[in-house]
Every structure is written in C-alpha cells, then in structure tokens.
Length: 360
Image (cartoon, rainbow, N blue to C red; front, side, top):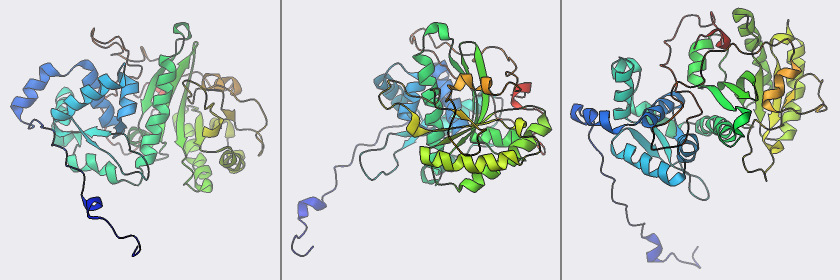
C-alpha cells in the first residue's frame, strides 16, 4: 500500500540451502547399493512403487522406531538416489516431506523382479508428476488411512493378534478389476482372530455423492463375475455428509438385483475420538448400510463388521501376512504390512479371480 511502502530488507530471499550431494545412478553405484540396502530399505522401495508417494511421517510410522531414525535413513536413501522428495505448498505451516521412487531405487526393484526398468514401467518424470497431481491429497489421504491402521496394530496388545494383512493401491486394484470398478484401495484387517477384507472408497467431500452411489453397480458386477462377496467401506469427512451419502447409497443399493452381494458400511472422520492416543479406522465408527436414511443402529469396530453380514464368508487364508515381517537385528520394529508383490500386467479381463481366491 502507498501508505506502507515495502522495505528493501523484506525483498531479500532466504539464503539458499546448500544442495545435498547425491550419487550418480551408474552401474558401479548400483553395485554399491547391493551391500548398503537393508531389507527395510527394499521394503520402502516397493511401497513407494506400489503407492506412488508416502510422506515422511507415514514412512516413519510404517517402518521406523522414531522420527529421527526415519529421517536420517531417508536422507541417506535420497543421497544414494534411491528415493526423491518434494514438499507441496500449503497456505500455513510447512508440509511434510513427500517421497517418491528415484531411478536408482527403480533399478533395484527391476533387478529383483528380473526386469528392465523400461519393462517395469518406471519413468522419473511420471514419478514426480504426482507432486502436481490434483489427486495428491486423495492419494496421501488413502495412505494415511492405512498408516493409522498399522499404527493401531503396532500399539495393540500382543494377544489381540492385530495386523494389516493386505494393502493394495488404486493402481493394483485397477489392473485386477479396472474393467468393472476402480476402488481406492483393497485391504485385509485382522484382530482377535477375526479377519475382514474390504474395498475402500475414500471421500474428501469433493466427489458428487450421486457418482459415489453409482459405483455400487460396478461392485455388484464384480461380485457376480468373481462369485466373491467383498464388503465396501465408504469413508467420509463429516457426519452430515455421511448422512446424505447413506440416503443415496441405500436407494441405489436397494435397487440392485442382489443387494446382499455388496455389503456396505460407512464412517466419518468426525466420529474418531480426538483425545485418543492412536485413533484409527479400526475404531467403533462403522455403520452397516441397511436403514433407509437414518443413522440409527450400533456402530461397530472394523473387525466386527462381518457380524452384521452373516452371509459373507471370512477371507480365505493365504499364509503369513508378510513374508518379511521381521526387520534385521539392528531394529526391533516389525513391518506390519506385507511387501507388495510385483505389479500384475494389465489383462483384457481382470475379473476371473477375486481377492479371496489367491489371485494376489
């Protein structure tokens, strides 16, 4: 403003930080990585390839005993060219560092799977494109949803036998079921001997609710094609939006040829206890769909949902939840999420086998 002229000192930018030295992605460097990378590092590489982007806080919660140890190790992986990082702009405060897969990490992943990097489908520019994607908040939000589940599992009593047995990305779901439906994620949650598998629709309040309800037809077609009934969880930001969504979902669900083939439950972020030490989607926030529009009825914990659907069979057992569940001796922490398998190729029709049939 003319009455408050800008002072010259305010035009001085911050002193630029010294660039972090990074190793070149050469054959010699990749040979060095063979003895530098731990099993946890390789797990992080696969998780970044599976889910595109994870924040520093998410990686720390998933794989490290403390934020400091996670920050130090991720800095080393960045220096070695295994991961890349960026910070998106936010209007207040500072966003956490976001990590994506870098060329050296892609080379390691491709070599483990017996592929060339180009056959893996990795491109550095595409990996970084998520930084400018209009779906960045959605992608990070889904990862945060599952990270909260892992955090709950880690802090549960040992006798509860709690774990995340599966976490598929939107990309993997699209390759398996994309000709009928594209869920935001697929997961399996086990607690106290009860296991529930589910598809997740993660809503940030930006999608037209009629479009969300319209997806039930695709889930019904998938259930018919696979012969497997898989519950659908709809996660919404507010109780008010949940009430509106339930009215539309119930109308569409009731009009299906076989509504029982698409069990639906909804929950809202507002229902989480803000004072809880480890709030998560595993809490008693889920309400199965069945009432025409009201929110009456008892909320259930995630592992209790199958009790509302007696016709839904428990998921088929497929061995241990994670073949590499225990980290090297230098870390007492366990990885409570399975290492993602190599991504399946795109098939003309991907509905011949469902999640419970061992198609993973």
